[in-house]
Amino acid sequence: MKAPFSSYLTDISSGIRELITILKRDYDYVSVLASDSKGINVRISAHAKSVSENTMAAERGIVVRVAKNSFYSEYAFNEFDPEKAACTAEKINEAFEEQYELLKDMHVQIYETGILDDEACTLFIEKETEQLPETMDLKDTVSLFTELNEKALAMNESVIDCIITGQSTHVCKMFMSENRDLRQSYVYSEATIIPVVSRNGITQSSYEGVSGLCGPELFDSLKDHLEKAVGSALELLDAERMIPGEYDVIASPEVSGLIAHEAFGHGVEMDMFVKNRALGAKYINQRVGSDLVTMHEGALCADNVSSYAFDDEGTMANDVTEIDHGILKTGICDALSAKRLGVSPSGNGKRQSFENKVYTRMTHTVFDSGTDELEDMIASIEHGYLLEGMESGMEDPKHWGIQCIIRSAREIVNGKFTGKIYSPVILSGYVLDLLGNISMVSKDREIYGNGGCGKGYKEWVKVADGGPYLKTKARLG
Image 1 (cartoon, helix red, strand yellow):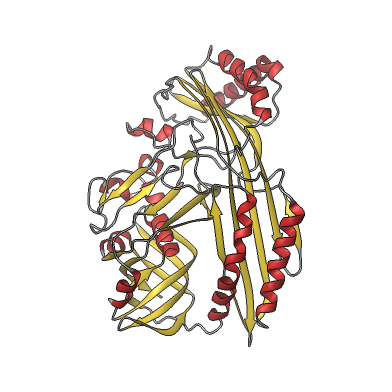
Image 2 (image 1 turned 90 degrees about the vertical axis):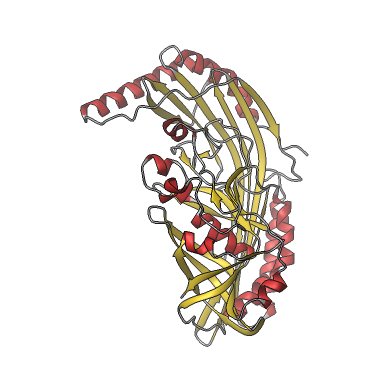
């Protein structure tokens, strides 16, 4: 079925149009983003059960953006009477005037920016889904998660808990300006299994996740991941500590995604170029990886949690080839930063919510597949490791160093697994070295969308990343 567009947004659309018309008398540019997104969040453990409507993207609110004399400002609110658009416009004008006077009194220098493009466009999209979070059977979901929790506890005496989580969000957004009327409705979902195990005073945990551009029907697929999740956690109880050094490694698709996100995430977000805070600006059209490295970024390069038709500035979604056979072709950009840099926006202007500002943000960041077989990649290693499981990561866009915390590393000697496992593992290094040393890339590719990304004052948005198996050299510790 189609994910139905919000009746609330439809009802206020004429009032929003009137509001834009009134404000346009005083401003060079006016746009409005209105959101009405509903969600469900279920969490089951051995000791607690919770159900809420709070998800990362669940919200209802409106943000108005205006520009006058190259100065942009925004006003957010969550109550709007379409019959009183003139009153709302008056409040907005008063707030903007107060803001402008304050900045003038403080002698704040305004970053002059040209007027955003406003080409005529009309769009109405309702994506397919099997279920909606607002109408799903919560009793069935709680029963499923409880059953999975109980099965995990019964698998091994070392399992002391198994946390099962599931989130589903029905996103509805409407972007309007003088010449644009864009409306979209879609559902994305994610779920995780997090077993907690303990033996002889050692406690470990692992996780398996699923995500997709679909409804809460996705939760049923967790059944196929329970055994692997518990097995991975139990393995960690016997894990050894890594001897620091540089090794040949094979990054699993999940780890490849983490590397993609950290290596070419914030470092090529072009609002960082405006502020001269990213080394990536100096490497456009230069080599940043081996010939085997091609990377895509965009809401259209995968069907997962960050797929949309247009971003929060009304720019159409894109599939951007950031790296083409080792050459950095471009970064990604929001509309205002694009105007300041003299480039085209890439459809990556995202807000945490209607109350937060727009930043250039990642959507799906993905390495392209290659032609190698995993078996051949393993056989090629004299002494190294297969890296599995993503915990967290961070990067330094100014100097292009990254650090990734990996769940575990399986030792390989003379092309065969030794049976030894190491955890936790920290991968660190210089981006150009890490990608420049990629020598084999597998045919298969996977996308993971169970995380979020923070920026600015830690505003969080949904992102996904992934890729194939990658063979490279890396510093482990």
